[in-house]
Length: 443
Image (tube, rainbow, N blue to C red; front, side, top):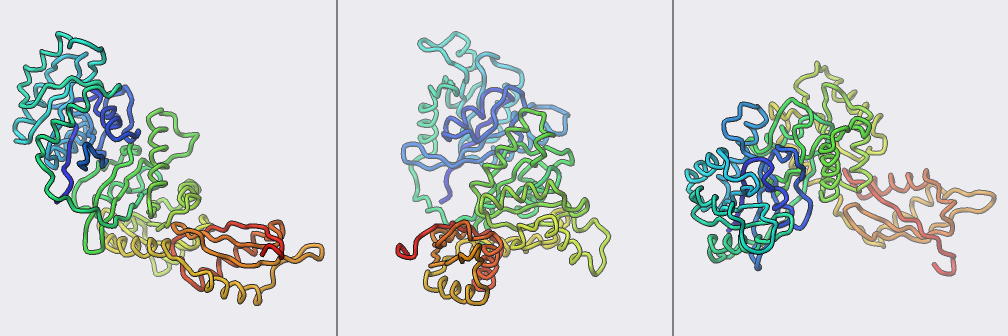
């Protein structure tokens, strides 16, 4: 049985994201006083009284709005309500009962889902203010419950009511192996379109306006290849071009999404071509030690000939010389060109990043490599490598013990890395070395 889903809905700026962050224990959703900050559905798995559940934060609903983005937000909130087992309807005691609250309450009644009414921003201690009782007018079946999402008071009562409505747990399945995939790239490179393509539904808002995605959004995908958690991220711009305070938060979320991923899909606009900004973004994934796939998106647009793939691949590695290990996939999220190949590549690079080599096999390779190409020397003193061992995976990390770290020139490290790759693979993943000095006697 799947974990129950709890959706938090309401009009803009009533404190949904603050409540979501309080329940999750992390600052996952962006919180700001500007209405409309949360645009897509944000998912997080949490636990209450030993019961696992999935929370969904949604964008603020403004019934009847003709704004394109606001209409998208309402569509996403509606999808969240359809997926939910229980809905928490958030209102604001400071604003009182508004016309929008009444319209949302009518929408929720038509959903036929259990709805818990939460009256937020009741921050004072003691007797409830008289304004609280106005919210009975909304006719919620469960509630209203007084809540202070900033302080957390009242959240326990709401979660207890959620558990009561869910009923007893019915043998929830253990979570299977899930590969976390961060989709990163410049704004408007097709990240959200790719996720919609692999999912087969409009799971995230897609717009030609750069900067539409502001949060890092998790999307679960299950198919014959396995189980994946796709993390759509806000487009990463140059720091000098980030003026908007909310967008700075978005870039931080994107970087955090890279940190919690297993594999990064680096989306590049093939029509525009790879740029230095793409190199900066790829560098984030490389430095974080993540397995990577370079996706040349919009491959349906450029004029191509027999040498187009070869020339484009050469340009990719001219701009990304540090990422020669990464496979390059030419796709079109819009038409679906080679999108199905992405899952095979994700599985492969994730497996390569998880590869562990025994110390004996490593040192056989090391002896052969040092015999073929002698370690460097300086002023009559030669580098001596005693042995190497692998200490971790994702990324594969190796400790090399030698007589002098200064003599271990980066060119020889690169030679050993290339020999490792030629011998054992490690396609799609960076390799990290830790150099340790030891005397011959210690070794």
